[in-house]
Image 1 (cartoon, rainbow, N blue to C red):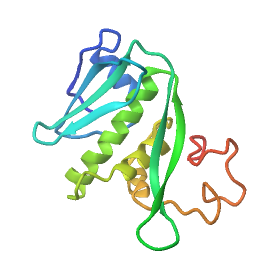
Image 2 (cartoon, rainbow, N blue to C red):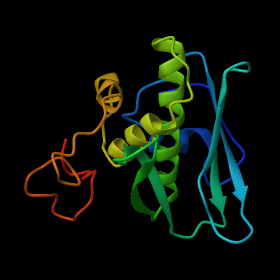
Image 3 (cartoon, rainbow, N blue to C red):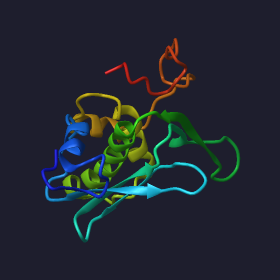
Length: 177
C-alpha cells in the first residue's frame, strides 16, 4: 500500500487509512489523498486520479450515513439495427467509510494500473467499476484480479455466468474468491 498518504479527515488519519486499505495493491509513485465529501442531498461516491500530479484523491462523505449506489459494470448490445446497448448494473450499499475507501481506491487504482503498468488509456470506466465491485470487500487483492476484471463478463444466459445464480442474486458475490 502507499506509504505517502495524506488525510484531511480527523477520524481517518494516515495510519488508519493505511490500515483500512491493507491488502490492496500499491500505486507506486502516487500520493494518496483522503478528503471529506460535503454532500448536499445525499452521500455519493467521488474520487479522481491526476496523472500529471501523480495523485489519487478519495472523498469520503461527511457526515457519513449508509448509502447506496448503482454501479454500471458492463454494456450489452441489443439486437437490431444500429449500435444500441443497455447498461448492466449492480446496486450496492456502503455501510462504513472503510467500504467507501476500499471501493474508491480500487476503482482509481485500476485507472493507475491501466496507464502506469499496461500503458493503455486510463478511461476504461466499466473495467474500473468491475474491478472495484468484485474486490472491495475482499481482504487481499492482486494484479491478477485486475487482469481478470479486464475480461468481459460471460453471461451464458444468466446474470452472473453461473448456471445456478448466486446466493444473493448479485452478479458479484464477495464471498466467492
